[in-house]
Image (cartoon, rainbow, N blue to C red):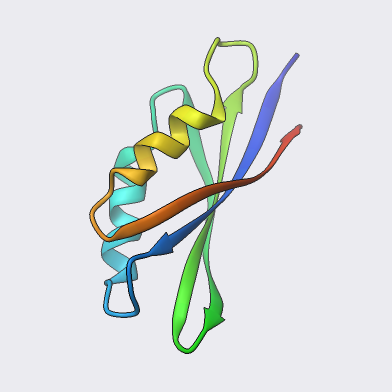
Length: 89
C-alpha cells in the first residue's frame, strides 16, 4: 500500500465565478489526510473553464476520495465536483 493520486474536475456555477478565489478556497478545503499536488484551469466551452485538481492521499488511512470531493463541493461558486481518476503512485 502507498499513496494514491486523485484527479478531480471542479466546475464553477458560471463564467462569472472568480476562479482565482475558488482556487484559494480549494487550497483551504483540502482535508488533513491529503495534500494538494497540482491545480490547473481547463477550457470547456464559451469562456467556461473547469479547475483540474490533483491531490495525493495515503490509501491505507481509512479515508476515501469521496471525502475530498465532498469538501470541494461545499466551496461557494462550485457547481459540481467529479472524481475523474484515482491511481496508485
